[in-house]
Image (cartoon, rainbow, N blue to C red; front, side, top):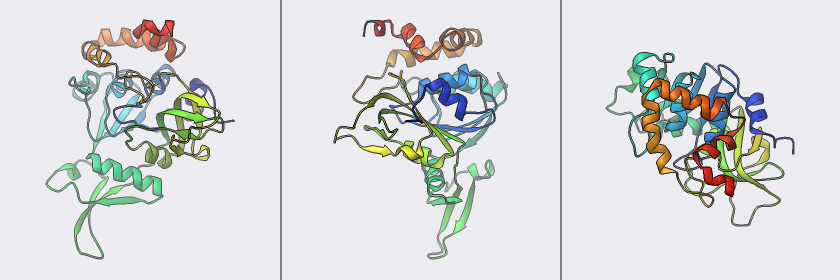
Length: 284
């Protein structure tokens, strides 16, 4: 089908300088391969959106791709800080980074509103915080039915939504399972979308949940192990050593820059990067 293509073509067609790009996946199915391709194609001035920016956004920020981060938590999960993220905020290196911070619930509601075609969503949240002083995307409103004071958050409608999934069929329908975050909402809220998958199947097993029909997906790209170092339920485990190693790699500007050059800019695709970090893959 026309929406199944290479990842390089998917990014070239759908991700442009200045775009708002949401890359979602919770604990597993994090779209690392797509993030690397965005770096490889040297996209700039991106407004990056993610509920839990972790190592992939540290790489994008450190590579100079981002001008703003919309998020609700950031860190190297189970390890500590994101050093490229911190240096962008503290020292404006490699460039300054604007922040639009929210709660997890607020981000979820923003995606849901965007997916529903609504201008905003509401929740019982943000009480006792001063986030409203720092963002124009949260307001207090009065419920017209109960008189209760609620938080209103503006809808998120990214230019591009990017996720990783286990399978697509040959029509471009997407199925995934395991822990789900806001992947579906992020894709439905976005104007364009890219889904990387472990494999394309002729037809889904009856147990597979088809989450996204082909008509809401702009591009599907087959990238085995495309969520590494996160895991893909039923396919491979989380690479904990990678996350630990990243803490040291990202602390030093020169070490980080050399890593980006070696693992992304000097490679043609994600499989070449994987061969360096997982040499045993060559034997699979």
